[in-house]
Amino acid sequence: MKASPGFLRPLGAALLICGLLFTGQSRAALFDDDEARRAILDLRGKVEQQRQAADAAMQRQAEDLRRTGEENGVLRRSLLDLQNQIEALRNEIARLRGQGEQLARDVSELQRQQKDVSQGVEERLRKFEPSKVSLDGREFTADPAESRDFDASLAIFRRGDFPAAQTAFTEFVRRYPQSGYRTTSLFWLGNAQYANRDYRGAIANFRALLAQAPEHARAPESLLSIANCQIELKDNPGARRTLEELTRAYPQSEAANAARERLARVK
Image 1 (cartoon, rainbow, N blue to C red):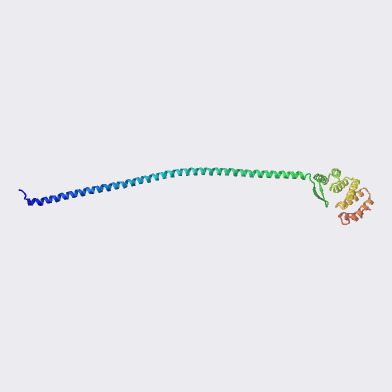
Image 2 (cartoon, rainbow, N blue to C red):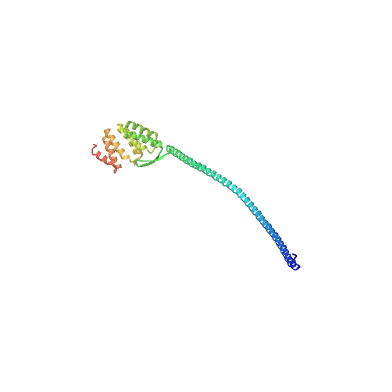
């Protein structure tokens, strides 16, 4: 059946409309693809920029880490060097402290030795330097040798060795004629002679003491000893005169009291 022209006109119109619609959709679809591509390209560009920025940041971080590592290495080496220096200083301080302690010990030892030497020198000097002596109420200066010889002589007398004591005191008086010990030595020499029955020699030495030092502490005893020697020599008149001299010259002495008692027995 053949279509009528009236029917064809609406159908053609419809086909034309469909074609136009299809062409518009195609153009819209084409337009959408270009936009998408541009969006994708933009997105890719942004991603690439971000990737590049991230790579650059990572490179900077890596460089920073590298520099930090190098700096840490330098710092560790510096710390190690500092520790080594500190240890060396400690060792040096310990060595110096040890030297200081040894030096202190050496100084102390030297001071002790110096003190010992000084004391030794002083002791040796004292052996030669005169010293002050107090004897029988008198003070005088005597050389060490004088004091030593006098003490030795007196020690012999006190042991009861009267012959040796007489010899020792005789030698002392001869050797030290100006000694402060002289008057006391004459007294002990007279007593040694009396013990040895050398009465006349004893009288002479007791008289020498009285002539040299009438104020001597042994003077009253010397007069009493002279009287005893005279009695031994049977010189009673001489003994009485000596006893009377004793009571007049030294009335307050113990020897004077003994003389008064003895006067009553001596005729």
